[in-house]
Each structure stands twice: as structure tokens, then as C-alpha cells.
Image (cartoon, rainbow, N blue to C red; front, side):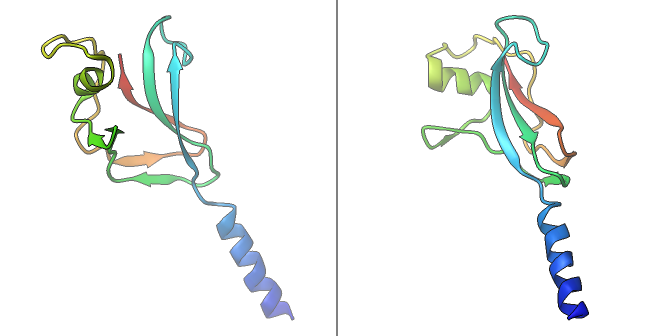
Length: 106
């Protein structure tokens, strides 16, 4: 009985330590200046998330950079740069529980 209880406890601890990634957007909600649009990832889980690749898609097309997203979604002409930050092509690292990682900001 004690062995079974130990294994059950081990599974419960593992289940309660998983990361839970959510995609959030804001219009100045992270203390940014009003009108700034940010696409971010939040780890709402209790365990760390190991990020290897970040792929943003719009209508099934891979977004290459923030300006490309604005061209796809909003008809912004090529060459017009409204972005304020851009992630590396392959964002990698660790996102701690409760942390928010900014992906694209315009």
C-alpha cells in the first residue's frame, strides 16, 4: 500500500509542476505606452517552460518578422516599419512560472 501511495504522490507532484503556456495580446496593458500592441507568451503553469522555437502564423502562413505580420493582417505596405522590437528567428530559453515573454511589439 505504501509503495502505491508513493507512486501516486509522485504522479501528482509531476502533474502539478507542468508549464502552461498561453498566448496573450495587449494594447498597452503591460505598463507600455498607450496604443502599443504586444503579442506575448505567458507561462501560467507552476513549472518552468523550456522554449526551443517560436512560430507565429497568420491565416496558416508563417510570419517571418513583425513587419510581415502587419503586412498580412493589416495591409501595411512593405518597407513601412512600425515595429519596436523583434525576437530572434528562433527564440530559445526558459520561461519561469508566472513570467511573460514579449514576442512582438508594435
